[in-house]
Image (tube, rainbow, N blue to C red; front, side, top):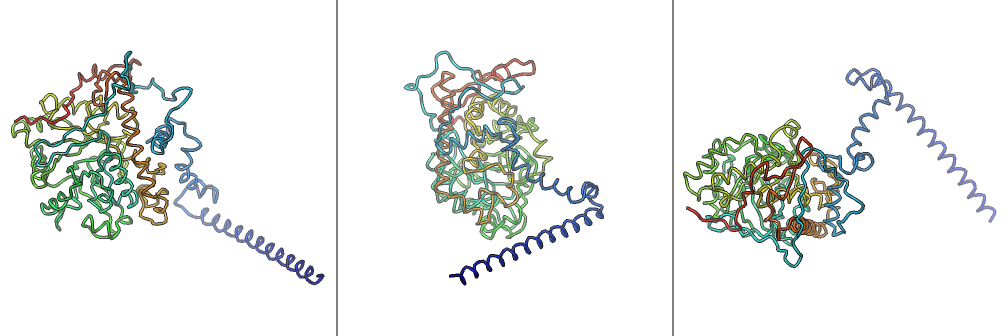
Length: 510
């Protein structure tokens, strides 16, 4: 027994000696490293901060990098963070999880800044027994196979490549369960878009991924192959995108896997940079030619997506439609906002180009109405419309449908880490790193996608009922007011005129 105790005591002493030696060695190595860093910083000539404050100056870069992660948790107020504040994100998270979305005590939303929108309640709101669901709306009355869209709130374009395989799977399954459509984005149609059974809108970007010939031209054969899928209900020609009008899509080479390259028809591992516009579209007439060609080839409704900046050309486009006839009109126009989102874009475009939706949406609706095309061409509004209030405003302003991409990213679990372009997304949504993707379980996230869409529709309906109308699409401009520079609010109707509301079924006027 004494021998065992002696052995244990000797072993303990030996371990302490080893640990002590390791500790001293670590301290010594750390000291040497600091000396080396001090000499490097003091003698280098590229960074003034590090030259003036050796070693300590390096922490500036660390804190700058960590700031975007910690700011939203410790320093930003609920309503001040950009592009989406904590209050907006929290509402989406609660809606997606099926949690109680009510709040207490009072609103933290400031109603005084210029541009603030709010709604006017009716003294006799719609009773729940008289409330209606927003009815399905037909798109493309002149197409061989018109689309009867069931939901006014849908999923905007997010390409496979920009977002991950499990994210696409979750969106596809969730969209089918919620009865809304899923836009492919410009990256082409993947098997994962189809496997959930959702209605699909195929987006044709400027690079024509998925429907291109070897030389990059639009392929009628590939269009027909895509249209052969019953789930593909419409085609959208993308002319411009909110965060980068005048610039094509950008997918870093690190995210162009072998599979994504095959779907898009591009080299594996190379940066995927789309042209800044369609080579074929250089005039209003060319827009109609492209839309008509795609619609004739596929037999399905076709429209185009744009950011409105200069708008004088729209008058020419509308006049040309009236000259050619209603059959040549686009079936819908998706209007993206200057504050729309993207995986990657130059800051100069993201910050400065295009009109925000608050100005462009009423203008587009009014132009269509002035040319008596409001019933023929559906308006799809896109750009930071992730909460019921913003979606209800869009319907008041003249939209027939509302689509969101980033709202559904939050529903999938996005934490706004701002890593979309780096293949390091911590939630697995915008990365192709399998270790990061494993945290995103499609079956679980599909349920969150469904709940978010359903809650959005329900709460937009609550706003409509408070305004005294039975369903969301009956919201009018006089139901919404906006704070002006004199501190007083004015109705959208007084600013833009009466609501040019489309009928629920497109007219087949000659």
